[in-house]
Amino acid sequence: MTPRVLEKIAEIMDRAPAARRTVLALILEDPQRVLDETFETLAQRANSSVPTIMRTCRDLGYPGLREFKLALAQELAVGGSPLNRRVRIDDDTRQVIAKVTRGAATVINSVQAQLDVEAVQSAADAIVGATRVDCYGVGVTSNFMASDLQARLYRMGLASNSYLDPHLQLISAATIGPRGVVMAITYVGGMPSLLEAVDVARSQGATIIALTQPGSQLAALSDIVLGVEVAPDPVMPVGPEAYLAHLTVIEILTVLVAQRLGDKAVNRLANIQRTLETRGVDMHHHPRLEWDEGAKLTVGKVR
Image 1 (cartoon, rainbow, N blue to C red):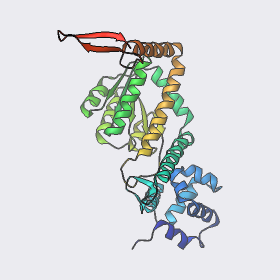
Image 2 (image 1 turned 90 degrees about the horizontal axis):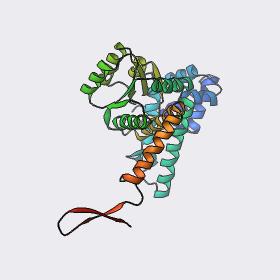
Image 3 (image 1 turned 120 degrees about the vertical axis):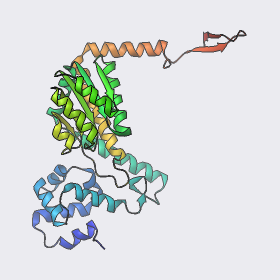
Image 4 (image 1 turned 60 degrees about the vertical axis):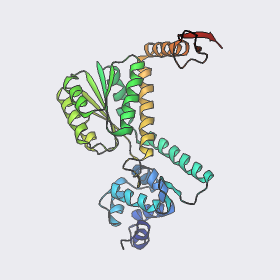
C-alpha cells in the first residue's frame, strides 16, 4: 500500500534539512490551511522560499506542487462528505454550515494574495479601450461567467458579446480585429477548442485576457493573465471554490471598468435601474393583470 502524505512526512521529518523540516511541520500542524493557501504564502510562513517548498514536495515523492496538493486533498477527503472535502460524513448541520462558509471565505481572501495588480489594471484598461469585447467560456460554469461578464459590460455601454459554442468562438476570433479584446474564462485552461479560438484571435491582433490558473496552456497564449488557483477538489474536476474565485475576479474587474468609464457608466446603470423598476418585471408595484368577460387581457390598477 502506498504511504499516505502525512505518513510520508512523519517518515522523513527527522532527516530533512532544517528549512524543509519547518515546511513539513507546518503541513502537519494544519494540512487544510496548506491546501487553502498559495505556496508563496506557505513559504512566507516558513520563512523560506517557493523552491524550498518544491524540494520538500519532491522529498515526499511528488514531482511538483500540483501533484502534492492533489494527494493531500484526496487524503483529507477520506471520510468526508461526497460533496465537500472539508465536511466529514458525521458532521451536523451547524458544522456543515460553518465549514463550507469558512472554506468559501478562505478562497475569496486568497484571491487578493494571488492577483497581480498590474495585470488587473491592464485588463481593465484594455477592456475600456476596446472596440469590442468577446467573452469565451468552456463548460457550464465558465459559460455562465462569460455570459455574466458580457452582461455587465453591456450594461455599462461597452460593445460586448459572449460566445459559448466552439464554432461561434472561431467566427468571433476570425473577425475581432486588432483593437478587440477576447476575455477567455476557464479554470483548467486546456480545452483544445478554446485554445484554437484564442490562437486565431491572436493572429488577428486582438488582446487576449485569460481568467484561468497560472501555468495553464491558456495562460501561455494570453497577453494578460488573471491567474487564480485553488486547492484541487477530489470530487469534481473543477470544484465550487474555483467558481467563487472567478466570480470574485469578475466583480473586481467590473468595478475597475466602471471607475474608468466614470459618469458614462454610472448614468447608464442608473437609467437601466429606473427603467426596470418602472416598466419591467423587476418593479416593486406592478400592475395587476386581469381577464375581462371578452377574454381580453387588461391591465388593472396598481394595488
